[in-house]
Length: 303
Image (cartoon, rainbow, N blue to C red; front, side):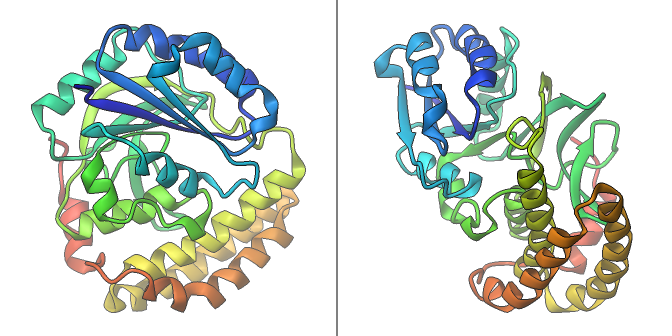
């Protein structure tokens, strides 16, 4: 019986996938691993790349030209998974030959917890998600002593039933921040993420690189989604403290967006976040991240 399904959301990923998916196939070899590809931009040849590399009975290809976003693509892919675990893996990540063997060994050792897999990108190494007083959530540097808040969506292992039980990713976020939203909810519910001593080469940002319109859309989503993640996942006492901190932080972020020429979509994102926050909060009724969770996280140490 197959243990692991690799779930990958594609968007303008044809050229990148042609480089990375052969390394996935070599790493998978004869292991109990399947693949599901949710393609949000089906016109750039990804289906052929996949078909040339994998046997038909080893993968599912789910095209959707409406581009519902990364979060929805992940949820749709996981909905049809029959294996015990899923590995969410970005298409611009290369797998060393022993990567999947090591991931399967980590699953067997502790099958009930999420696993954050490391990524090497932009000259640094990162494992999972960390809290940040300015941007709220950030890629966690591998040198940080405390354990990850949760896995990064770029390389994350989840027990399939656990991912579904928490509703997967909040689809309204579309992209950028959906993994942090889930991480806060998991942590508030007492679920801790393991860190795997494995770092995967990651290009990072291939879907928006060189496109000013998409860079603006990313700035909009990040500004909006920070507010929505806080509104959904923080307790009211923590929110009362976080609001002035976030307000000051967004002044600093606004200055950066001015230098990048992205102030207008950034401000539009803030406006949307403020308007949509109450509705986003009502859509999560589970445990929320409060001062107890915050103190536990800040004093936590990696296992």
